[in-house]
Length: 282
Image (cartoon, rainbow, N blue to C red; front, side):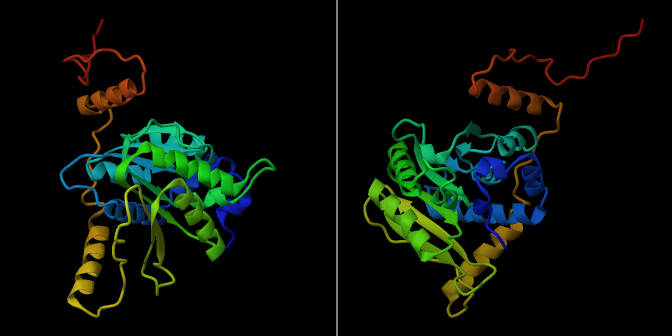
């Protein structure tokens, strides 16, 4: 099966048709949510504290919804306008969204993110779609700008599918050149179906990598580790934050707040917001 990044730029691949097909596939959505939750766990953020997370290659906001459910604020960046349109109009995500090619660098001020996650996106930078694109330079530019936008000691987690050792080394080499430390965590390394690669990067000193999840049952610790994953997968939908019904006061106020954060002019709140209007008969 051909990899999507072989077909050309991501903004052309994820056109309106492909974006809607992708977001209509319940299996894809479930896998994306599981990987997003695992990436958030690997960030090892302090419990009970709401952080600001950058979602790189956020797409239609599937991973962003998981960030919200974990109690964090977030900003998403993606190159596909069609994916972002679904995030705003269909999913009505709570994060702020930016359309941008991540290979051109992150447009943020220094130290504004407590963590970053990226699901199935970084491998797109390993391919040149025009004569003026150099994958190595684009990766270095990306990682350097990301490093500068993160707080000291914070982590960035990249889930991706390396096509070869050479590609994995290209990505890791660019990250190290930008100043990151870290390594790769491979969950379920012996499973062809469940195997997942997570590049765990830190802006601090050398740190011990988190343990990978496995399907082996050799000790109580490994049993507990597998049980945690299964219970998390089972509860993904059960713990999902309830969305307010369209037209309700809660829905209207939330939409106004999103528009204010985007700098748009919004009418002031009123006690009449969300109330049904009486029909006047003449």
